[in-house]
Amino acid sequence: MKDIAPAISPPAGIGDAKPANQAVLDWVGEVELLTKPENIFWCDGSERENNFLLEQAERQNALIKLNDKKVPRSYLHRSNPNDVARVEQFTFICTPTKEEAGPTNNWSEPAETYSKLDGLLQGAMRGRTMFVIPYIMGPPDSPLTKVGFEITDSIYVVLSMRIMTRMGAVAVKRLGNDANAEWNRGVHSLLDVNPARRFICHFPQDNAIISVGSGYGGNVLLSKKCLALRIGSYLARRQGWMAEHMLILGVESPEGKKHYVAAAFPSACGKTNFAMLIPPKHFRGWKVTTVGDDIAWMQIREGRLFAVNPENGYFGVVPGTSYKSNPNAMKSIEHDTLYTNVALTDDGDVWWEGKDGAPPAHAIDWRGNDWTPASKEKAAHPNSRFATPMRNNPALDANVEKGEGVPISALIFGGRRSDTMPLVFQAFDWDHGVYIGATMASETTAAATGAVGQVRRDPMAMLPFCGYNIGDYFRHWLKVGKRLTSPPLIFNVNWFRKGEGGKFLWPGFGDNMRVLKWAIDRCEGSDAAVESPIGWLPRPDDLDLAELDVPHKSVVELLGIDHEQWQRELAGHQKFFDSLGGVVPQELLEQREKLAGRFKL
Ligand code: GTP
Ligand code: SPV
Ligand code: MN
Image 1 (cartoon, helix red, strand yellow):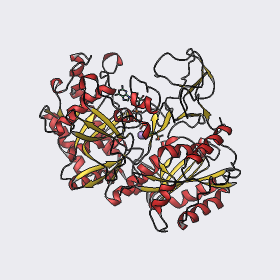
Image 2 (cartoon, rainbow, N blue to C red):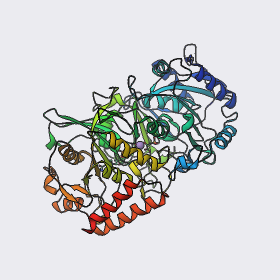
Image 3 (cartoon, rainbow, N blue to C red):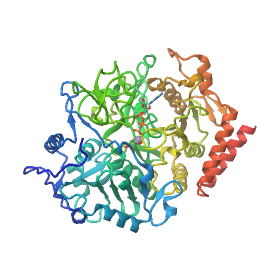
Image 4 (cartoon, rainbow, N blue to C red):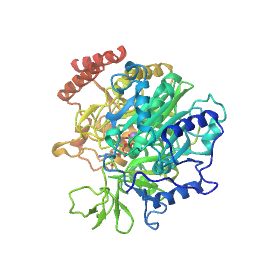
C-alpha cells in the first residue's frame, strides 16, 4: 500500500474552499513556498468532497474499499510497517527554555528546531497535493472550543480528520476574519516515512505543531494528542481550564438520576471500553452513555467541573473488540469506518485477534502478506485502530453537543497493574486524589513504540501528553481544587490485577459497572467503605456482585492491600518524585509522607 501519492486534480467546486482570514492565507502561502506542492486543496468537509477523496484514495492505493454488504462505506488502510504507533522518543516540546518543558518531556530549542524542520520540509510536497484542513475541537457553541488548521500531504489524514473532528465550514465560520484570533497552526508531511526523519514537534508559545515522517494516528492527526492534549494542556493552564487524557461517560439509575464521570487511563488501558460499557443483566434499568472516549476538556462553572469532548469520532484499539467485550464499539464500526492495520479476509471483510467467531482460514495480514491461523505473526497489528464518527455509537450521550459541557461527579484514575493496586479505592480528598493521579503507574502497551508490559509512572495518564513542566501541571491541578466548591470525588481503579497463574482476577468490561456503581453511590453519600492507609476501600459486601461468577477468595484478593507490595510502591513514588528533580509541589511531597505514615500506624 502506498503512503505517498501523486497530486490529484479535483473538478471545479471541490478543493477550492479558500477561507478569507488573511492570517491563514499568509501562513498557507509560507508553507507552500517552503514545501512546493503541485497544488493546494482547500477542504470544506462536505459529503461531496469526502466522496471524491475516497475515490481518489482508492485509485491511489492508499485505501482498500471493504465489501459494501459486510461493512458499508468502510475502508482499510495499511500504514508503513515502520510506522504503527506514537513515537514518544521523537516527540518534542519546543519551549524557549528546557525548564518550561520540564523533566518528563523531550525538549528542543525552538529556533534550531524550526530551522531543522524547514530543512526537511524544503520541497517536501513536490509533485503532491497540499491539503488545508480547517477544523474545530469542541462543540460549535462551546466557550472551550478551539480552531485549528492542519496542512498535510496525506489523503488518509484528511479522511481521518473528517471523522475525528468537526471539519470545514464550521471552523472557517468560527475563526472569522479577525487576523489576531487564536488558532492552531499544524503542518504535517509524510516526507519519505523514514523513522530517521520522524519528528513530532510542538511550539506552545506559537500555538504551532510540525509533524514529519509519519503517517500514523496520534503522530499525524494533529487535532488529537498534539492540539487537544499537548498544546491544549499548555493553553489550559494559562487560561484556567483543564485538558486531560480522559473518557467521559454518563451513568443513569433506573430512577432517572444521572451522574457524569471522567476517567484517565493510559493508552490502551480501557478508556473506549469503559466509555461504552453495557451494564450486566443484574443492573437492569441502569444506562451508561458516552460523551467521549479519549480526551476531556474541563472548565470550572459555579464551583464544579464541567467537561466537553473536543473530538467528533473515536480512534480506537481494534484487537480484543468483540460483541462480547464491547457491543457498542462493534455496532459503531459496522459501517462508515476507516480501519488501519487490521487483516483483510478473502470476502472483503476485516478481521482481528479477539473478534467474535472463528478466525478465517485465510486472510491478508496488516502487512499485506498471506495469513492463516497457523501463521506465527498476528493478522492484525496489536495497535491496529478504527476511526469512526461518534454518531455511530448507539450509546452516544444526549448532551454531547452541549457547549457548557456535563457536570462531573467523579474523576477516576487507573492503570494496568498486575499487582499492588486494588480493584478500586477512593481518595480522602482532592489533594490526596491529585497525589494518586500523580503517582499512577501502568504497564506499557503497543499504543507507543518501545517495550510492552513495563511498569512506568504515568501521571494522570498524561506522561506522553503534558505540554509543559509536569511540576507546574501538578500545581495547576492543586490550584483547580481550591477553586472548586463541589469538587468531584476521586477514585483509582485497576481492572488488570492478576492472581495465581497470571490470570486476570476481575472479568472487566461490562462488570466494571459494579465498581462504577460503588463510586456513584459514594457520590450520593453512601458510607459503604472502610478507611485504609491508601484511601477508602469497599469491603466485598460493599460491592454489588450479584450474578457474578468470581470466587469470594478472588474478590478478597482484588480488594486486598499487600503491605510488602505497598512498601515497594511507596519507594517507587519516592523514586519517581526524585527523578523529577525538585519540581514536585510541597503538597504532594507531604501526601507521600502522610501515606507512608498511615502504613506505619
Ligand atoms: P487508547 O485509544 O490507546 O487511548 O486506549 P483506551 O484507553 O481507549 O483502551 P481500550 O478501551 O481501547 O482498551 C485497550 C485494550 O484493553 C483492549 O484490548 C481491550 O480489550 C482491553 N480492555 C479494556 N477494558 C478492559 C477490562 O475491563 N478488562 C480487561 N482485562 N481488558 C480490558
Ligand atoms: C493513545 O495512544 O492514547 C491513542 C492513540 O489514543 S493515538 O491517537 O495514536 O495517540
Ligand atoms: Mn488515548
